[in-house]
Length: 298
Image (tube, rainbow, N blue to C red):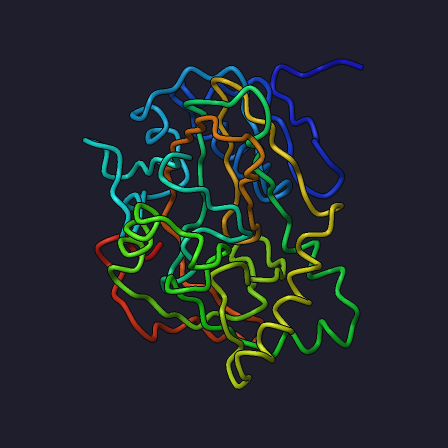
């Protein structure tokens, strides 16, 4: 088989592709950006290997896909780089399924992650295709999901029981909720470019509008189980000089805490997104918190 100079190599049947022949560290022309955009829409997550990038280069690459957000609504950025968020194991391990920053009105369109410190084993990132999850739903459950809306918040139930959290972790949690956000999003989001429908839930989705907390947890757990089916997931094994770009509008991801006490560091840069819209044409609404300091509306 002839390998083209620019190639898309699928990593799984439902999500993920490695891009060969496009250097994210270079100045990309319009045709290359269009090629990557089409690949992103098709495969949801793109992996680039052997990339020589610094923070400035990662920001330059991400800007090809739109205006950048700040690093985070509440968490500090890398010094001197206000759009770069350090994802550092020494500052906590967010091993729960989520879509980035869904507690604000217009969460990021896309996220980039770049390897800085990679443990010798473990530390993979799982990325799930929420459009495939939606298609997997039995018809009655899909019809129900189409009608639902969920409240997303950064003031959420953490994975660890509170009695197991040390003082440093308590400080990090306090910083994370130093500004509280609550936003109502459709449970089924329509992708603004492809028109695909995807389950728009994850760890920040805490309650279904119109249901009790207990009922919400049961229903969200059921819907989430379709997102995290193994066939809907690509497992990114981090290597030095690696970059991953994923569509934050139609994926969830999970950082696996399986590397003992070893250091792990990625830098994240995100691209500003639009306000989600459900299949009924209704947009998301903010209940609490102004995120205009963090992101423009794409």
